[in-house]
Amino acid sequence: IAADGYQSSIREMARIPTMQWNYDQFGIVATLQLADNIPNNNVAWQRFLPTGPIACLPLSNTHSSLVWTVPKSMHKTLMNLSDEQFVDEVNKAFTSDVYKQNEIISITERLRSCWQQVIPVSSTLLQYPPVIINIQPKSRAAFPLSLLNSNQYVAPRLVLVGDSAHRIHPMAGQGVNMGFGDIVCLMNILEQAVRDGADF
Image 1 (cartoon, rainbow, N blue to C red):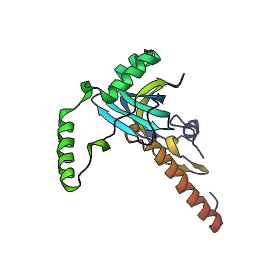
Image 2 (tube, rainbow, N blue to C red):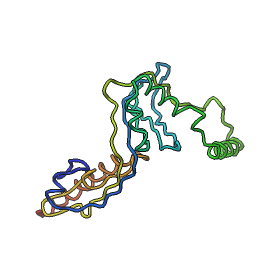
Image 3 (cartoon, rainbow, N blue to C red):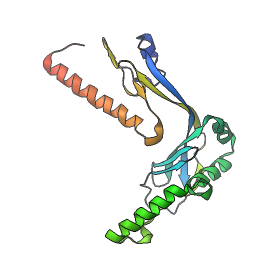
Image 4 (cartoon, helix red, strand yellow):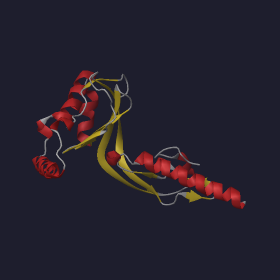
């Protein structure tokens, strides 16, 4: 079972070709420390910026995971900032008017107005992204984003799973779910093979 990532040496040794596409973007990841005023950190936040999406995914009541997609030209600037400067940029990216897209805001306001006519909703239900106060030391990293799909996922006595088989843009956070799906599928096939007395 090859589960050794998008630069799979097992896939290379098996001479399985791939189709690849470079997005000219980087993903910046970090573990964020949140302000203490959040009772339950159980909401994932994503904002679509002109430079690429930024997402904050809950880990615990005090920490979240950051995935920020930025153009290739911008990633070094963000990586070279001090932790304090980087935290400021993350907070700005989630809340600043600089990144507002008026068309999206207009559509959102119209939808909310229509929805309130059907079901009155209190404005107190509105939530805002958590305030980031720090990042966990040495948790910030950057990696190039690309698409990858192996021409085949199976070969004699070999199966590719996860990023070894396929890699997608992290925008929707579905890459890990696809990998989990690969494992579930493989388990079902192997269980059936054991019942049938098959050999791979």
